[in-house]
Image (cartoon, rainbow, N blue to C red; front, side, top):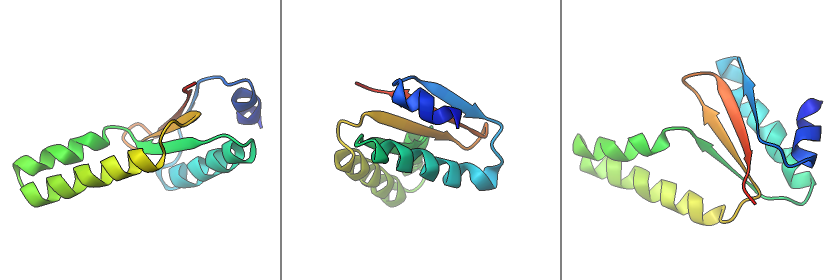
Length: 98
């Protein structure tokens, strides 16, 4: 698979046109390969901070969402790769961060 070569070479890349039901599975495959290379990764959903702005409508939900995002970022501190799920456009972006 071509993604393995791109990860091995520490390249940034995108996978486009992924059926909605397969985005999570593709992320798991990428994560498993990255971690098998003794590298760390962070998976996140693009535009997820928008959930924090729902605090304007419901302050409790907005606060809980932002706390969850903060905890996730602390648990995946200093990743080698970031995997961004873009659920609206059915694509995944993989970025080398070091």
